[in-house]
Length: 230
Image 1 (cartoon, rainbow, N blue to C red):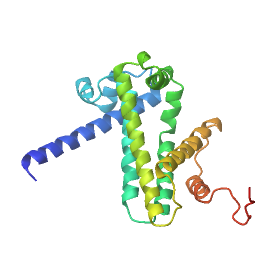
Image 2 (image 1 turned 135 degrees about the vertical axis):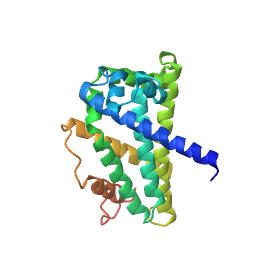
Image 3 (image 1 turned 90 degrees about the vertical axis):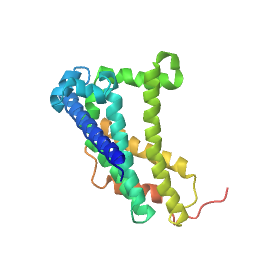
Image 4 (image 1 turned 180 degrees about the vertical axis):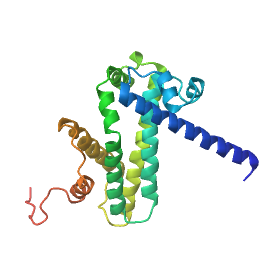
């Protein structure tokens, strides 16, 4: 490896280390104080860094939520990619990926609850809506960040589609539109996660991923029943 490449790689590792530390510190502060009451000074103290260093990685409080969400999607994508690229059958990979999605969501449960109770989250949701329906009511920076987050979500769904494609090619799964099927699976997982809020944030069952995967693979039709002709 050339010395310039080594320095570049070392700098990238250093930036990643600092950025992750700052974002984790920000999450801890938000859990204690809520997003609206959190300041960049709070984040700097929690991360034990100067505010000038914080601003090198996070441009300001307005970008904090986007950065936290972006980091979450990056980690989920990388972990899902590791599953897709690993050994095992497509069915086994599908089970692992669905289990990962639920456990990662569970790990962010407290932060999600705090954010949903914060008035700033309502503003963020209005930006989501405006970005797709009323571009004039969202700033160019907001629309850019929303676009980046959507791209990151699509990357995760694309990895799921690859797992389904592998299963189709191996004869494990029936032929299907794998991109559309991956979107359906995403909707199932998100729906299950959001439904827990209405049940009082009950913890995810240890068998939830297995049960959801089995439901997806087997469906609800009785295989012993002879279908009637139309």
